[in-house]
Image 1 (cartoon, rainbow, N blue to C red):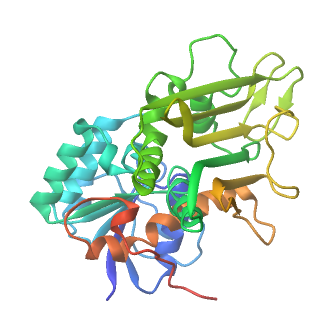
Image 2 (image 1 turned 30 degrees about the vertical axis):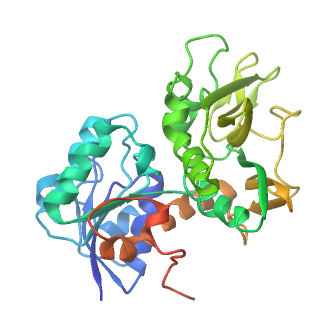
Image 3 (image 1 turned 180 degrees about the horizontal axis):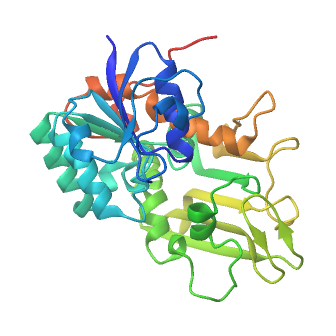
Length: 357
């Protein structure tokens, strides 16, 4: 049965999601939200680089979109820097009977650990509208849940599990959010970027730590954050930004679940600008700009390396496509689920795209 779908925002992830929705015969695009004046009134196809018009034009009227009675909205608008406004937007859809899948609201990747200020209004909206909401992506998301759970299914005893994103962000054109929040180009010792203020890392990646602790049936004594910047001695030029000597060009950070004084579940990032940055830190396997990796120490030890981007597609671009696919592919399962906030453990063990060729 064809699902009627709205795409909410047309940024990096939103454009890819919009293209997928238009291309899938089991999905019907019925609305598009755009926040900038230069996008409003333009056809959806034009907004994602397709040639054949859809007849669906972008609007900034949230109430009109909610009134369409769509089956699902794909919400990729920035929520982390505008949480109250974004919360009102998704609740409007949920209360109107439209399910939500999203790549923002990363605090909800594991909804069981989300704070009440966010969880309670969404649960109330889901109850009022008989709807569900699911948030995921490639990281946070896939690497710390599906990939990690697959690795853990292969061991008889797990002593520790480490989830890693090791990625060169040099060719990722997203300085306004990723660059700023990671502090690329900033001076060390200055006020830390938003990402590294106390409690922020745990709010984003701590959910994955708790999900894996639940899977392992271990009780954590503590959850700790760590952050380390790397300062470049020479200038670095890349698509992301220009970094002057003496400024930050790589970061290493993460969240650890502690049992009996030692970290047993670690979710960490190593992100750099060009291979010249942070040469003593971990790199992805040769021939790749990035990897999502899970390493389980135990019996037997297991290492799973996951790469996106084949056939000449850059790995940063492929990561954006994969993030969009992660939620678009979940539409059917979310629409079929009972009302409420959903995590990956609430959905079928696998869900996939529908279009081949």
